[in-house]
Amino acid sequence: MSAPATLDVGGLRKVFFPGTANEVVALNGIDLEVPAGQFVSIIGSNGSGKSTLLNAVAGTFPLSGGTITLGGRDVTKQAEHVRSRVIGRVFQDPRAGTAPSMTIEENLAISLLRSKRSGLRRGVTNRRREVMRAQLSRLHMGLEDRLKAGVNKLSGGQRQAMSLLMATIAEPSLLLLDEHTAALDPKVAATIMELTAAIVIERGLTTLMVTHNMELALRYGDRLIMMHGGRVVLDLDEQQKSTLEVGDLIEKFHEVAGEAFAVDRMLLE
Ligand SMILES: Nc1ncnc2c1ncn2[C@@H]1O[C@H](COP(=O)(O)OP(=O)(O)O)[C@@H](O)[C@H]1O
Ligand SMILES: [Mg+2]
Image (cartoon, rainbow, N blue to C red; front, top):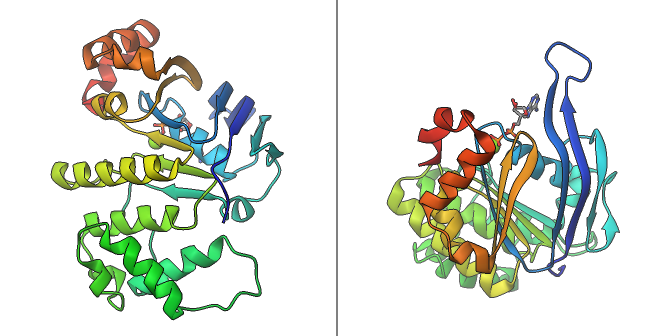
């Protein structure tokens, strides 16, 4: 088990295909300090670098520049699989977070073990089963009575709820959510969002949540960051955020993004 940690990102740069005709500067100098327990919403146009920022923090690829510290520890050069012990992630695709050929309890057991050191007994013990049942029952989807069911039998919303549980069951130092409700029906998306907020707030998790939905970004989280062209162009604290409405945010977006905004309009609604 680990505790929610401070994330400190300094001078972060990521250039894909450097020195070629296809060069893309996806992150162009990001400085960001997220205190332990803070819940940050991140918005921005398509291609502004939101997913690249989360991938960089998770260690998916080597950086072109900058440093990342988590809980005061420099993890810049740490391999992704090592960081994944303390970083929980949920992606847009409900299938990405769970192993389809395994049962509900096997999936959860993997998440519980991921954060632990080797030497612990593997597999599903009775005590672990109790932890799982308790966690599953809070989803109000009846999954606590279906521990032996294959995850491929679940609906998209149920799988995304499972993904969220798996990302948080081991008390991650950091939680990364990349448009994790975008592929769901509106009603299911709302359920998953409420569940997310409940878990994040109850456990005080340090969280970065990327969303296309400005209304969600304003309603949830204690800070709102807007990205554009690989930079942070707006950074609002809870108090500033509380005075804004979607219309104000769109205006601010227009100021920084100019014409690019019109193209992205649909994606932001
Ligand atoms: N693995 C990759 N290889 C090459 N280019 C990438 C890769 N990932 C992202 N990009 C490029 O980096 C830019 C930022 O992408 P991304 O971070 O996915 O944007 P967002 O999540 O804000 O929509 C885009 O131009 C995208 O095409
Ligand atoms: Mg993205």
